[in-house]
Image (cartoon, rainbow, N blue to C red):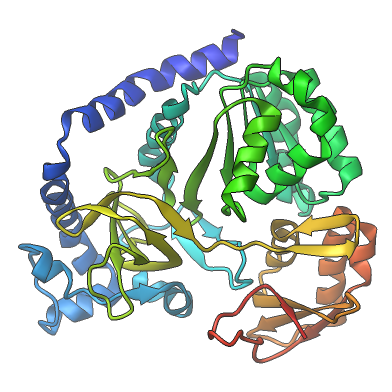
Length: 435
């Protein structure tokens, strides 16, 4: 074990042990009481410092003290789109945020929200606790098939990130490979890099991992000699169970899924027993039907249980879960999650571009509030963008410049500003949709 990975693991171990002991010593029958007590501690600050909730409490629409589930369920359910339009109303400005975070994903409708540095203190031990399900340690070598948004930016920040990824990550045993271009040629190079790097585990966009395995079937025996602990999919689900099984067959190891989002951080993680385990120390998760009533299958709601600059309270993430196991109304495990369908943009029949590549190139523009790519049956693509100001050709050229870094052909895409994006029959705004 090299020095830096060893020191990283040593520094995390006391926090990880505390996390493991917490879950080991808690009975499922105590989850609900623990969470409501924890939420009440936060609720006092939220009702004083977050304008939306302050108004509801002062008008007596919400109680000052949450005495049980009946009181908790009086809190309105709020969607991402509503929070996006009212970010300041849902932010805690009792002190200044340290930075702002932007979501990505399949909606093309990023949410920008404030954050405090110490929020990661609650997040990282939980992450390593979840990975410990597969015996993954912080000192283990990781190969990551992921986005490289740092190469799309400009200025000093861009070069700081490049130095971090090129020098810092190798020191701690991480290797990152771009998941933007998922052509067979690039994925075969990724396969060779995996064999050279000899990681202990692999993490990547779920659908990218499936393409990685398919492009490198000839390396099956060599992959299995690596004795990988696991391959972990993230940012999206697999299209079908067979894809997950196929990846496991090629790499010769368990295949798991990390369920997280930019705004919630880690929510749940698969366990080798097949179910998703909710990280309920940090998140109160509900499952409700279309009418907002508790259900075993339905919409997922999230309430954060640690101090945040942008506290989430009964926040509707937009996904559906099924097979929910509960203590009262609190979900502590579930069997499946549906949503996060990140389609590929096909430049040609052999070159799929992952949605995150497009998202990263477009959302770096501060002026753009939402976007959508529409295509014809002949695979002619047009980018439609929304903005609160009139965009110029210079703004469009900046986007084209970033897209060109992913694939030169993307710089030829037509870009148009519109007031409204196209919706599906179900009323959803997808990032990629047919004209």
